[in-house]
Each structure stands twice: as structure tokens, then as C-alpha cells.
Length: 117
Image (cartoon, rainbow, N blue to C red):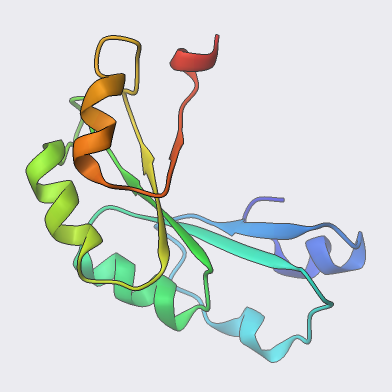
């Protein structure tokens, strides 16, 4: 479930995704059930800190390779990754051509759409 904490709890889903633009803390008032996961996305250090305060267990950081407005590149990705103890998921532009570079990022997980098509 994306960005609707209350509905995710009502439907007894496994978790909720909080996008980078959501800076809200209202969901912290709700009690969750066991194994309910909160994941979020971030593009910079400020957004990482917000996701930490929102109690996200995993944080998607993008964009690692895809050259868009949120493009980080490998070096800036690694710098951001060191500023948090949360599990980091690399996102953005992951393909067969750059899969070996993922090892350099030393990230715990990756996510992608085009790689798995």
C-alpha cells in the first residue's frame, strides 16, 4: 500500500510505503500489528532524516544510475548510505550493464523495474 497508512492497517496488509514527498508524522499515532513494515524513499540527507523519524525500516534511495532530476551517481549514493543505520535499497536505472557496479555501492538490497522485465 502506498501512502495510506490507515487503509493499510484496516486491510491488515504487510506494510506501507511512504514516498519522499510525504513529510507527515500522523501515522505514528496508530498502533501497528507484528511484522508490519514501513518503507520510504529519499533523495537526499534531509529526506533520509525524515524517513528515520517516520520509523521507516527500509529506505529506498534513488536515483543510483538513472539520469533524472534525482540522479545521485555511485559516489553520492555511497555518501548518503553512510549517514543512516537503516537498511538501504538502491533504486533507479539498474540494468544488466551496471549490475556489477552495485557491488561497489555496498547496499543491502536493490530494486528495479527495467532490470526484471
